[in-house]
Length: 130
Image (cartoon, rainbow, N blue to C red):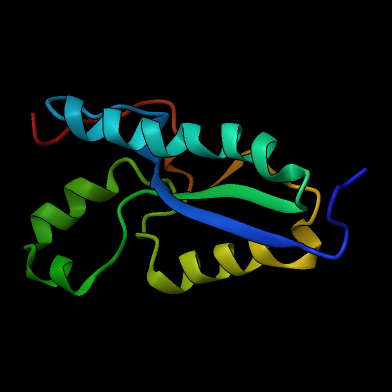
């Protein structure tokens, strides 16, 4: 039973799939993302009595305007590890976060939703920057 049944909230952290799938030569970056990945596990327990759910939404290569400066070859190399062959974009992340704070996700807590165009499911990880 919740201590504060009239209070409810949701926290969504934005993480990265590199918390589950490392990239060569980026140890510190991957480790920092693993911290974000661990956060909802503890916080979900701590805040559940107040009716607050805590989750992560993790992405892979996210399409940003900055990526527009990458040449065609660089973009192709990044997409090798993305089965759907396109980067996640801001709208995809917005929709995932909106779902995680909605009533439809009210019983999901301490979890991570991968919004990664299938990159975490792919068999091989090819580090083209090695």
